[in-house]
Length: 107
Length: 120
Image (cartoon, rainbow over all chains, first blue to last red; front, top):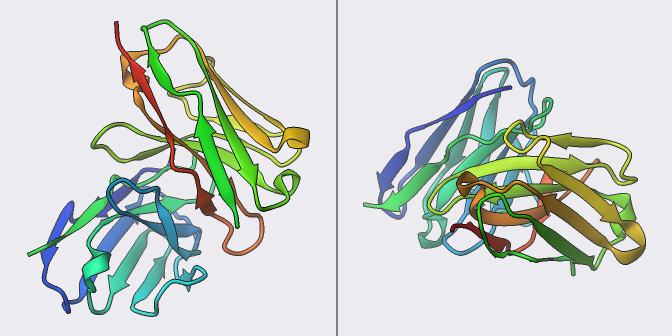
């Protein structure tokens, strides 16, 4: 089973600041990594697929990068609606594990 | 509009059973792979099961293998999860999620979830 480790667990930032979230895999994923956003009381929403591709309707301030075992989700300038929990997930093999999440909170 | 609506959750005693359903609409259900993902209260996401579009390929997380059974009825546009021998650690919000085999490949649509509580 591939283990995904996200860091930091919590990121305290102000609106307008840049957020950088990390996801490290226990083995190579090639580029088969996705990022999801989850707000309280809502299901997750797909943001980024295959490491760097934005899903439909996702604003350009969200970007993803990385390959192999190291990946990054960047939010260039935080909007009030971006404060949420972010999860990475791979599709390299089964089981399709998720990272434990990074909470982006208002400082 | 794509809609996934889960149902069937509730309170069950340890060792008991429940059958969850996920009703799909707004897309050609038989063309899509489907998954169940759960989230314990205040915790992260856990993928638990996958079924291919035809139902011929199925995978489970080790945590539920041998106790849970995923199935689908394409004629009824429905996905199911039969949960047996339930444990306290199975208590969670259970989501069904659509998976696409073309970009964006991943879980592009999710239901609102159905809550399973396991307690005596």
